[in-house]
Length: 120
Image (cartoon, rainbow, N blue to C red; front, side, top):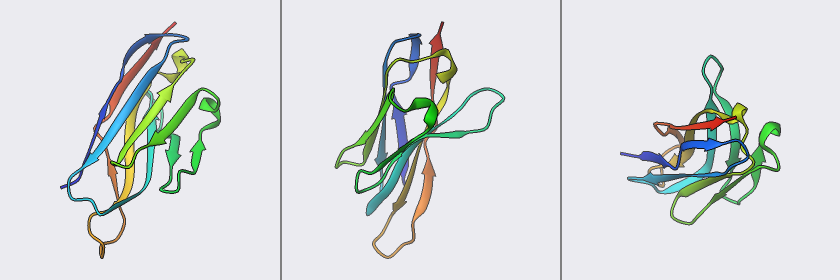
């Protein structure tokens, strides 16, 4: 059973920084794309950033230059968030496309979410 476990959320003042982590565990053969999404109250879930297995990255325009996504060889993805703004307040979700076995297809998984609150 695959699990994505997030950590690192919390309350921070505007201009501050937070680092989110997400560890994928369980029966995993390979991980393709890992990413972070967020959902603010009353809004749709949106892509924040994602990173492929070749380390290529994509960012939402709203976070470019402030957030940095990275991953390590142990199936953990990080999101370094700097210069945080009140509008960054949301529940942040980890997401991964991965194969559980060498012969299985790619399946998509979500973490449980971690709250990030930025006060003004």
